[in-house]
Length: 295
Image 1 (cartoon, rainbow, N blue to C red):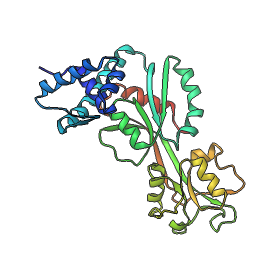
Image 2: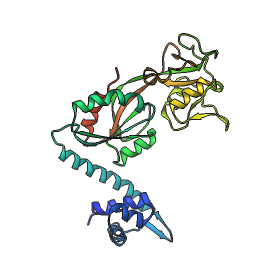
Image 3: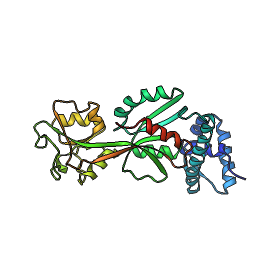
Image 4: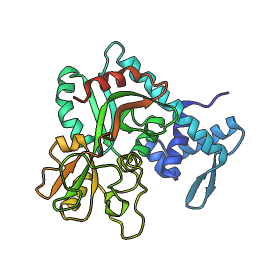
């Protein structure tokens, strides 16, 4: 006997909510029904999947592995349903797209009107988040595709290119680096830098491109967004990095900020549409990449 999709769904919800009552509510069933489904799954697997303690539910090692595999099975099943519903109608119906914060506000306003005009049956649901959580969402079947920036190591993920985005330096007016032309290699120093908080891929990509380690210490400022970063640069707090697409969108149109290229061999990040390898919506993700192409 094999586990049913319903049983796997119950286990996935139980892992997410760590509570039989909350998982049952999310599944729109009674708590006894969900508990019975989990018990049936345990009989089929021949091992307990959860440890039941007062006020808490914790997965066993078997349960954790089962959840990991269940997420893939459920995601592929949902892919099958969506593919059947939209057979012969690319980029139609629901499409869940993740986008990193250093791309979303600069790419989407330019690209979405044309996409909607060309694919009026497309119902696009957008989630803005950091790359690790978007990748996790792709693997768990919570997203159909995600716009991210490379380089980024992610096993089991395929991608299609949107284009390159140059990484630029931003300095306060009056700063020694606020001159004209490319900044020569070696002039950028860690002590001068203010950066996005840890978790933003642009932070790591920029530092790797100029071969600098992130400044450390409790008093190091870390911005939550590029908009905050520009304001901090304008205030004279330090030097930072900005993506070219943000500069073109007017983010750095601030009298207190000077934007310069970094060396003659300008560092770049590659913007791509990524999806789970084997996804039935891979072809649509590729079409989406074409529609979002950078100029």
